Every structure is written in structure tokens, then in C-alpha cells.
Length: 207
Picture (tube, rainbow, N blue to C red):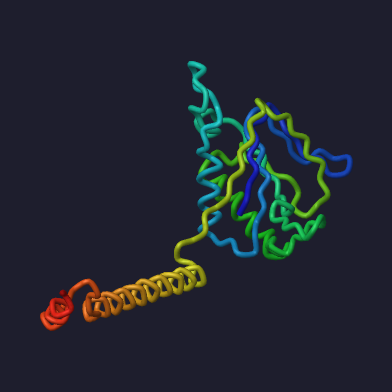
């Protein structure tokens, strides 16, 4: 899951001629849901969005307070294009969750935000509509946020296990070859050393 979070002095969403949502000071969140996202990703994003310290405190110290600390507003807008993959110069959106699955999932994220914060301060656009989003960025301050890959993902674990197995085989093969080389070196006669017989021959040849 990806999000673009902007600190704003104001922001609004218009569909056609109708303004469907607006906020004053706070944050505007553009949220892109991928086909692989789970509840774990949603929980991570909700926690981070509401707790990012993008605001100053009462004494003016920067990066000290979150939107919840300051009791400011949040405008969240579904943005599937954040899951864009470029094919040449053409954007491809197959990585985004299909709309029929994304809409209930997105709505559950909004409900989680409202449960964690004050519901009247969480605003929304209109899912699936062609929207005009007006953002007055404050700063400007823009943060890109991506949910981490789940360590319990079976495919990822399988890949990591295979990589580890290959490493262990490589180390084992290297140790075995090294042992054979050392054994071969120990059994190989030293050309610089001479036996007693060779010494006798050498001495016999002396005038």
C-alpha cells in the first residue's frame, strides 16, 4: 500500500460542479491499494498516517506533533494510480486492487481512522469518481509512505529459505574443496627437500 501525505492549509474534493468534501488545516492523504494488500498493511498505514509528526508544537518546534496531537483534519482520497508500473512510457495499473475489492477495503481503512481518531475530522472523496482535488500544500511538506512487506508471507519466506539453502550449499562446497586442497598439499612431496639417497648421489658427483 502506498500513500502520499501532504500537510495542507486547506484541501477539497469536487465531483462535477459539487464540492463533496473539504478540510482546513491538516493533512491530505492520497492512498493507493495494491492487489496484495492485507489488513496488516491497512493497520500499518492508519497508524503511521495519524501519528506522523508533521506539525509544530505550541512553542513553534518543528516536526513535534501529529495531526491527532493538534486535533486537525484529514482528507483521504483513493488513488489507484499510485500503484502504477511503467511499461515504456505507458502507465500500467494491474498491480492495483480491482475496484470491486478495493472499495470495501478502502472503506474499512476510513472506519479504522475514524475509530482511532475523531470521526468528524476524517473526510473522504468519492470512490471511483473523476475528482478534482484542490490541495494547498503547507511548506511544502510531502511524505511518501509504503507499507512494509509482511515477514510472514509464504512466498517471500520460501524465496528466502531457498536463498539461504543455496548459501549453505556454497559454503559447504567451498569448505569441502578447501579440505581436499589442504589434504593434497600435505601428501604432495616437497621438491625442495632431499632424501638421504639423493644426498649420497649428490656427494658422489662432487670431485
